[in-house]
Length: 414
Image (cartoon, rainbow, N blue to C red; front, top):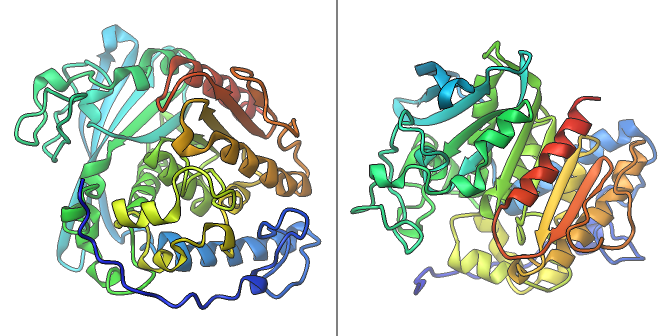
């Protein structure tokens, strides 16, 4: 697709040395303050963590609004005999008002009926609509725009039809998730914030906060998706059938980028799972491999803050990198999954990131990542940090989910 987005020229004004560098790896050091002072205690880590959060807000993801003051949850569906009696299906509209402006999006929630309540939950954003994760005819068809492609021939004039039901079910194994004792909550990305360049910031939650756009650290789309996941957590905290202390945030591809930022920014998420999130997600920019900062900012200029554009062609010179996002999740469990054939996501770079993040996990007295070298194909490793690289390409497979559910049961049942 031809991109006509004009990139203004910014001065690369931040001193790399001021952020602290790991001399051995040349990566920005998580355990060194911007001042050059070393982090020597967990209390100091909390201060360093806040410093890193502010860096990422200012330089990459942008500044997000806080929890809305005027927000309500409308449960418009509560079917206790969904999926042949296996689950209770709830559908909830999140209504938000800010300064006379309104936005809303729907949460689809399945709760296993046989599990002991309250249950742990997994929440994630989907690509094609809530109706696409399962063929359940009771799921509301989204009225938001849906991308039409060879993978979604059911879309007519940008709208979902009944033929779209279950279209993306292979990436959302609802039965397996429920059988493992987890509830599943999901939200459609386009209801939150448009992923189309020409519609950027004109729909969804962005209309609530126009004042956050005319600035360098503007409220970008990845940040908006992450912010909506936190609003989903706000709802889950009100649902007595959910154990809100055991909620995992999950994401695949660009939505994996959002899941990582949500988990970094909102400590209420007990665990984070990233599946092939690549550049701007789990992989290191410093390697100079796979998708780069130039492509992120030209093909997807709405994803990140305007301030991130000054780092175009400076991937190996960043004063921060994505291992620090994983560090911001510490000491909570995190799982990063890669695929051998997904070169754009740079699987070696995703592993290098969790390997570097292991230092903070161990500093915080966890067992971190249990290996020093990338594991063999289809051989998951699970400490407080989990990782696998599987055969195949850019996708979410049953193999991936099998590992995620094992990891989540191990980590969240402690």
